Image 1 (tube, one colour):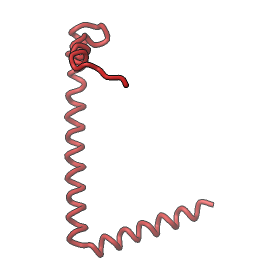
Image 2: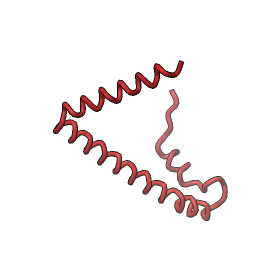
Image 3: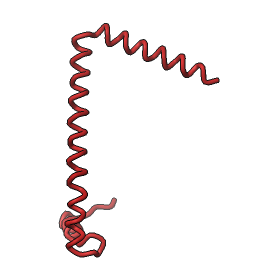
Length: 83
């Protein structure tokens, strides 16, 4: 089994990016920070949508069942027409 020692992970993290020196790490941070912020924002939005959907299903179980049945029927119809 392969294992890495924690200090070797930290040493690799502290090395310069691709041998380009310390200037590349600043450029890399300039790219990764907005990407990380966008991913966090998207994840928060997805959690909010999932919570809203759960609340709707808990408040209206029969309507949610009817919607799921209609989606299933539509998908079955569309798949049966592919021949």
